[in-house]
Length: 369
Image 1 (cartoon, rainbow, N blue to C red):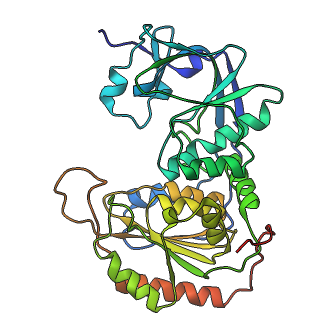
Image 2 (cartoon, helix red, strand yellow):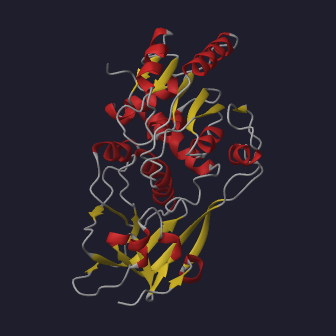
Image 3 (cartoon, rainbow, N blue to C red):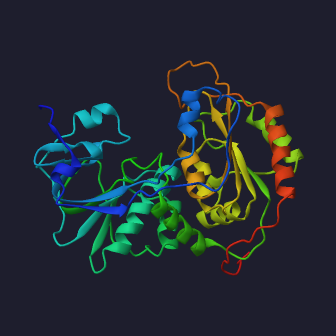
């Protein structure tokens, strides 16, 4: 089967709109690039932005979905902007198969969730666009196209009031003909390294729906990576023991409900730990919270830098030496933390917290605990 030609989404969209327009941005919080960021090319990736994101939305009509490749096809051409987080060969071989195609009902506005089972990708790249679509298409009948959803994905939809949203579970072995599809730039990673005001508005609404009146569990929390094999810190157990002795609470967000995660992060004064999906919850922190990120030297990724900036958090990051690379897979490669440096940073954070006035916590629902 010949490889399909490509086209751009702007070329084939029936309608193009703006979810948010870029505006000048002047973060009112500190951003400290610590050890390892002496190199200008490293530092430039993490410098604060001077403008916010422009986020576009696209209405596509009469498109075909190759579900296995999560690739949209219009008039026999692959839409380039739908190529995201799938193996290169899947996109390369994306095609139109009419035999057994599922033809979706007309008159409905469909929106696509890429069924990420990763907390970061679902919360940051599916939820803001879905929330905007549902709040800005009054009177339209909207249906969500997704894979099987996990408990925490359903909980997020429920907190936002979307638990009754009609949903079709996509079959990876089938192709779909979609009459009207609402697509946006959150969905393909275009906004991952930008400051998005509309996304932060969604996270704020989500937090307000989940917050309770219970007191904070801890002033400083360490977000452990013990439930993931990706980019593991080889001496994390040593660091956790050290931090516990200093009164830091060790948490594993994946073992909590979404509401519990929101409350934990919102009420904390400082969040520290390695780069990982659990850190996505910093979007629920109060402005002025301190966020200290441990970054593997082989994986310079400023996605949480931008989330911290949008949430108005004080940001601190250090690079830590990577382990030997045996497989060539950046996610399988570990790194080694420096306990002495982390302890010194922690004590600086404590001194800073002790010197400032107490901050208010957003009003929440009465606690059920």
